Length: 310
Image 1: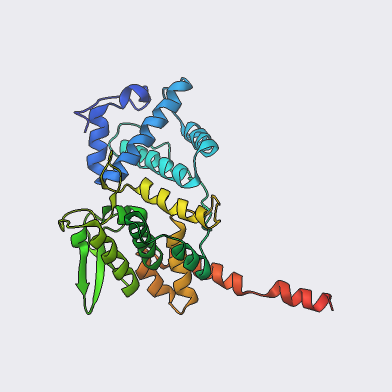
Image 2: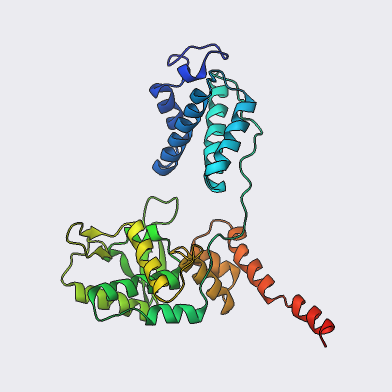
């Protein structure tokens, strides 16, 4: 590593970080392309932060200031990811003898464990799906997308990347294989309930002859045909929410994932089954839903009120 750069630990850091150094660090962390992209943005923004303030040899206090700066205009999760990148970077520079680990023991942003998006009740889901005009190709497509997402909890990116060939039998049922978060292959699957399978088949039939290699859901735009983007799927879901009067910033396409988890638990699904459905690595993530429902079922306020207002 010293062959790449030979610096004193107190030399100006902004002159130390070059393309070769960053490439060496990326090779060291051996992360996914998405993580590398995020870390790259984080380090570049950190350097801009230092340069704007004339800091050439940053200290622990500068990283703390950077964290507070991020909090002003970024979500806690983004701040956490950016600080994590900085921490990983300085851990590596210290190991390689390039620059001291000034980020050691620095905390990121406190992340609220409560979900930032609301879920839909079963009656709202029924109203949502019934409101879609299924006579048109667009309606058939939108109905299939929303039915799929609300029964499986798939993320928009998984729906976006789905191809026709990804629908395959599992046991005596049909399933959709998808690329899970942090995975590089479509190794996970969700089962297609019969109404969902029928909705997808209805859409594909109306769409016409298609190659199995083609995207499962496509754009209807003449200017930009082809695979739907995650933004397009989010926009489709949002418009249908608005159509039935659910116009809230807390209700988005991601609400369908929360809805799948919540309705599964409300209708007898176990936390373990819900964890498997959503593909959560940790059961603790799934338990957020369970704890929220426990609180909803807690009727303490009504018992107190009944004791007072007689």
